[in-house]
Image (cartoon, rainbow, N blue to C red; front, side, top):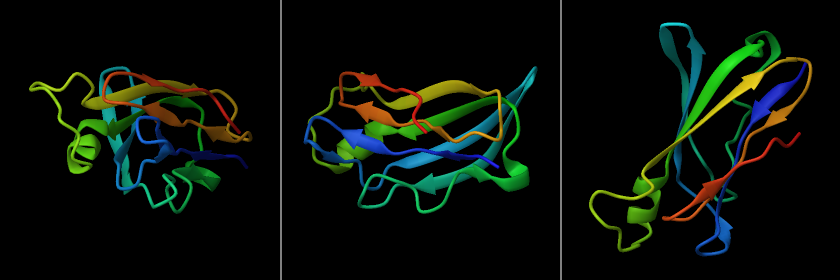
Length: 117
């Protein structure tokens, strides 16, 4: 079986995003269900896969990263309202036997992602 994982890279400071709160949601027509809330470790990763085994199912998901709170905790001078606050990455898992790695590369002014393995 595959697994779902994530990590956060703070390219403003050139380091992993330590202490970012991440929420994982399953998304279906008319419903959005919180599956898990985790916090990234010193390496910017979560300690265990977000999904694996029987929980790893085909479907639509969202990862919501509390990037604005992270940058505020780092002492970054942010405008109010914050330009980048909560970053929502909507993605699909087509084949649950594969690994899906969905990282966030972020600054207070921009972000990107890609599918890793």
